Length: 79
Image (cartoon, rainbow, N blue to C red):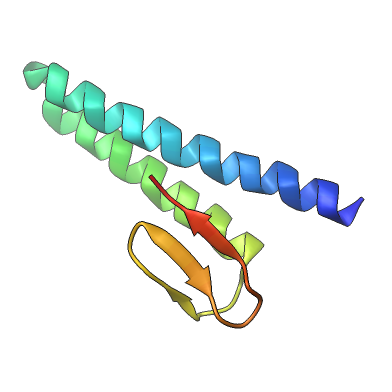
């Protein structure tokens, strides 16, 4: 049950980063809405990082696009 919940949360992090990536791509396509789209993407990234912190509360996450925790062996490719 706990593993199932972690997998669901892990999928939630994936979805949040995918949405952020899509927003960044949308911003590049629509110059007129670029600033607004970038702000939305930044908000999505913040939400995704908060969700990631809930899955791994350790402050030992290293990496930029691939987060890896030395304390609990949790790892996540972000983009």
